[in-house]
Image 1 (cartoon, rainbow, N blue to C red):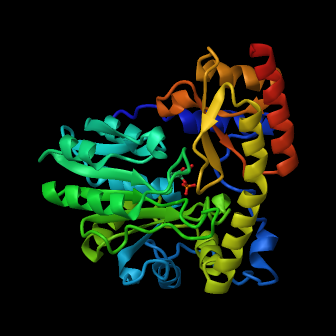
Image 2: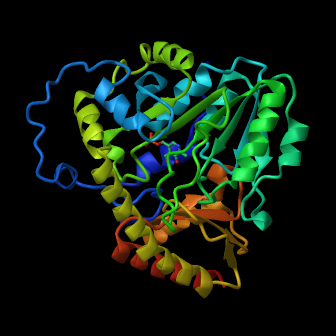
Length: 367
Ligand SMILES: Cc1ncc(COP(=O)(O)O)c(C=O)c1O
C-alpha cells in the first residue's frame, strides 16, 4: 500500500512549534502532568508492556462512557489516529466503496484512497448548518459500500449531527450492510454543556473511535480507543499487534486516572469554560470582517471553519500569514475546500487575540 500524503498533519507537524502564533490547533490548552495528577502519585507505575489492548482498569473506565458496553468492547489505541487507522485498514479492500461526510478530518479519506477504495464524499451543507442531506447518502450507497465514516462533532466545522440524521445514516448503512465508523473525539467539548449523542447503541456494525486529545485536553498522552462489538474488538486487536503493540504504561495509568468520573467531569468543565470564554473573541473577528467572512458558529470543539471571499487561494493565505505575520492557520485546501480557513481558538487567549489582530492587518491590506 502506497500512502497518499496526509498534508494537514504533516504541515502542522512542521510548523506548529516554529511559528510565533499558532491558531491551527483543534483542541484546548492541554493540561500539565501536575494538573492532571492533582496531588496523586503514579511513581509506582511499572514501566512494563501493559496488557496490549489496554489494562482492564483502563478499558472499564472507557466503557463507562458507552452505556451497555464492557471492557471486552474496547481496544485502547495510541490516539484516535491509531483507532481510525486500524478501523479503516481492517474494513476496506481495493475496489470497496467508502462514503465519508465532508469536510472531515482527512485521515480516513487518505487511508481509504491509499488502500485503493473508491471514496465518495457526502457533503455537509453550510446552508443547513453543516448538516448532511440523507437523500444524498441514500443515492450514494451501493452493495459495494463497506464503510460510512462520520465525524461527530465534526472537524473542521464544529457542527453536531442531529439525532434524526444519525438515525437516517444508520438505516441507510443497514440497507447495504455497511459498517459505520463514527469518530467522536470532540464529544464532550460542546459549548452548551450538553454532550452530543454517541453512535454507540444505535447500530450493530459500528466502530466508534475517540480519545483524550480534544475534549479532555490531553493530546500528549496519545490515548485513544475503538468501541465495537466483542468479536470486532478481538479482530482489531490483531492489527494492533502489528502497529504499536500496546499503549504506553504511563498513558494507560494516566488515562485511567483522567477518566475517574469526578475528574472526568472537572476536566470537561475546564474545556467548556475555555471554549465559552474564547469563542466570542473569534466571533468578534468574524463580525469585524463581515463583508468578507461568514461562518456557522461551531457548537463543539475549539475550531471554526470560516468562509472568506478575498481572491486568494487558502494555501497561499496560510503561507503568507505564516511568513509575513507569524500566524499559523489551517487552509481550506487541506480539506479540499478552497476559500475557507480553519481557525483554532482553544489555546492561549492573549495569543489568540494577538494572532487575530495580525490577521486583521493582513486582510486590511488585501482590501
Ligand atoms: C476528527 C479527528 N480524529 C482523530 C484525530 C487524531 O487525534 P488523536 O490525537 O487522538 O490521535 C484528530 C486530530 O486532530 C481529529 O481531529
